[in-house]
Length: 163
Image (cartoon, rainbow, N blue to C red; front, top):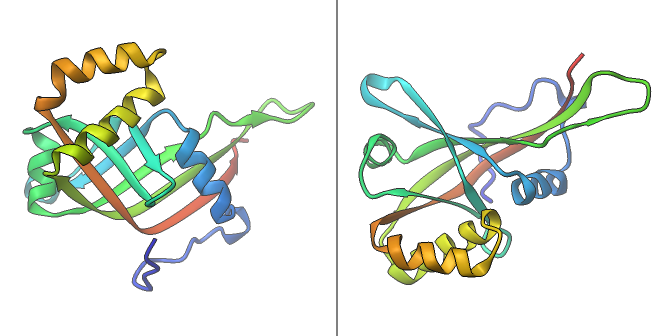
C-alpha cells in the first residue's frame, strides 16, 4: 500500500481502527461497494463481490468486459472501495458496533488471462460452497470476465457505535 499525503486524515481519529483490523475486514467481508467517477463527473457506486489478496495487497473484482463501471475506469482509474463487517452487540446494548474500511485506490483492467483465471477463481472460492461449482462456472464463463485489480493508495478503518 502506498502512503500518500494528499488524502485527508480521518476526522474522528479516536474511532480509527488499526491497519491489521482493516486487513481482517477486507479479507472476511462478503460484499463491497466500488465507486468510480462516471459520466459527467457523477459518482457511480455499485455493490460487488471481491477478493482481497493478502500476498500482493490488491483488491480483485470481476465483471463483464463492457459496461458502466468498465467505461468509467477507462476514463479515470481513481476509485473508492468501501466494505464493512456485520458488527457486534455488547451485553446490555441494543446498538451494533460496526467497523468499515474505506480504500482510495487505482483500478487496472487486467488483460493477463492467467491472472484473470487465478483471481476470478479465488473470488469464486470465497462465495461458492464447493470447488466443483467454482470450476464449472469458470469453464462456462471465464472468457467473458474482465478482472479489475485495485491497488490501495490510502486505507482507513473506523469503528462506529450505531447509537
